[in-house]
Length: 177
Image (tube, rainbow, N blue to C red; front, side, top):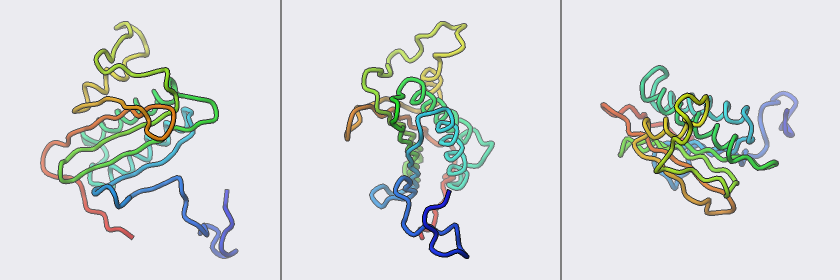
């Protein structure tokens, strides 16, 4: 789908910047990717895939333990936002932020449901043989720390997890346009 191309010869150029995506805001030094996604399994898959691409571009390469762990954290948190935080007609918000100076990658997923809250003290309440209910338990093992807080600009909550990178600094410095 195109949105008012500037000319017939260049159909990919949009006349105004897209407001739903922000890759490098000035208020957060380091690398940041944030975007709003539909609260559906397809939206969760797209968030995971875009996070994979962004991590690789930031110097956390495909196939590395850090890349795989962070991708799994993204997958679990976005799947939970879709499954447990879904409100019809409302999207979830995803933010991935890497701070090279402290060597931490932070994953944040915000949904609009307030009555279903995660429990950091007891993340795994499912039976050991259950097929679901282990997502936050997995996140708690992979992440350095995780928690949630109420959404500051409306109803809902933000679930976040931080992952500490090991070894020498892998994050690359991306030139800003």
